Image 1 (cartoon, one colour):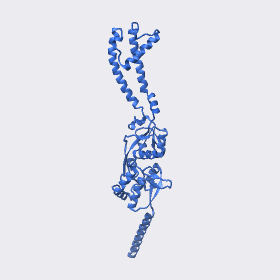
Image 2 (cartoon, helix red, strand yellow; image 1 turned 180 degrees about the vertical axis):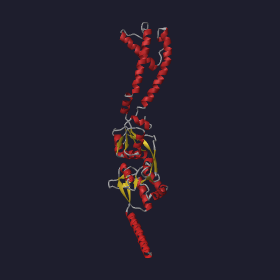
Image 3 (tube, one colour; image 1 turned 90 degrees about the vertical axis):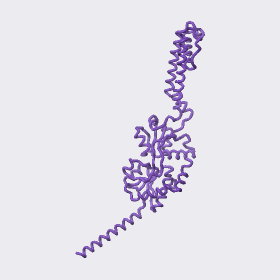
Image 4 (tube, helix red, strand yellow; image 1 turned 180 degrees about the horizontal axis):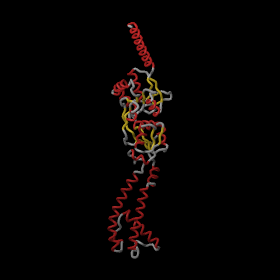
Length: 363
């Protein structure tokens, strides 16, 4: 019995050691699977299938600090998130926003960059501005009000004066005199009151004083309304937040926080698979505004201008939702704490601050 127990114990220990050595060998021979998707300047692909960019440089430093090997796979954003959820890859590296929805199926590293969602539009030329002004419903409403009030004032004075005031009504035909009365009313409300002594009747002179006061108030009001309404027609400056996007054609990249935000506000929008196509849609007039991460928009528009693209595109100075970028990691990943320790160490270094300056100083 004693011999049997010792034999069984020896066999058990040997099995445990063998399993330990097997898994150690397997772990050391299996590099981490890193998924990326292009998101300049955080992940930039080259013609030689090489990857660089801010996030890639940060990950390379972390991997060096941890002394681990890794392979890189290219994915679209929605594919990358799915690969993390199904544990086909170990870590996602790009401009991935940390959100509660993604925390349901994955973990995140500490944040390494903070930005916000922003709106980009195409600057409009003078012809577009004139077109927008003359098609503005407010302009034609104001013109209609002016015509109507001019007709009423002109008719009022015509009834009082046409029989005895040849100076104001000199035309021989009835139509001509009615036209003169309309011109009188139009001048009354656009240039201010006439001299009261130009009217023959006492009623006309008294009415001139009261209508003159009202016309000055009317002119001031019309001027203010026109200035407000027509200024909003110039360019796309009327867009100041998310709610203003409901009245224009909007685009966003698929599966991003931009798309989720627009959906949460009930704003219908066109979806694009990547940033180049999203920016091209705005450049070509397919959409009137796009929503994406501020830092990505500014970087890609700035780079595009170097090659003669995106000269008319601009990022509006309105901050929407804040975004914090981190590495997305499979749940209960054994390397999570080690990744975070290395990230915090690198993020506080002078070298990292210099890298940030190199990427964003001129953008």
